[in-house]
Length: 217
Image (cartoon, rainbow, N blue to C red; front, side, top):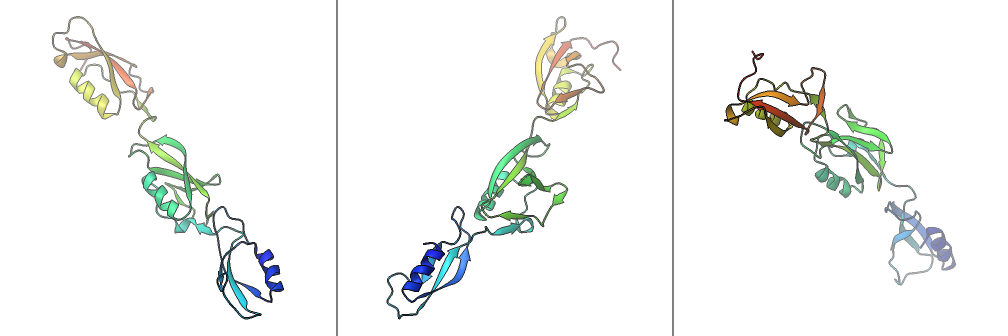
């Protein structure tokens, strides 16, 4: 029952309502009685005081300083911890990071960045029931320089491509190649360019020959 309505009813019955405590309940309007002492249907004397607990009009605030460590941590695990604090979590974006995927890189509240590699804004207050937005890491999508593979033997070129988190695409033979393991790379697509970039996860097509190019060191 709303506190105002209960107070009017109590006056008619010679009781006095005393608010003993108030708590915030997500999704509940303020000023609603959620507990009372004496309990309903108790036998009491006239002019008795009835102590009640009501819902708060304003949500409790949690400072960023009270949050668990979030930057660089696994999103799923931390979102569960925040749930115990009545704070919701949602993914805002993903960006490339060389570390493990789905780890927290940035945290936003109501459009404001509050946690990142630069630190955390500990004075910001988060409303219970509010939502934090997260930017998470992903393994692919970043860019890097195109490696120079011409003149390398095929096995070494493949190893370098994979170690750079790129993929070996089609392997095309130039002339007769009796033994691919001892063949040399004579061409690649995309071609090497000191200023060129390739996305992590993209493919490089190789052209191989049994003979080493004459212009190789």
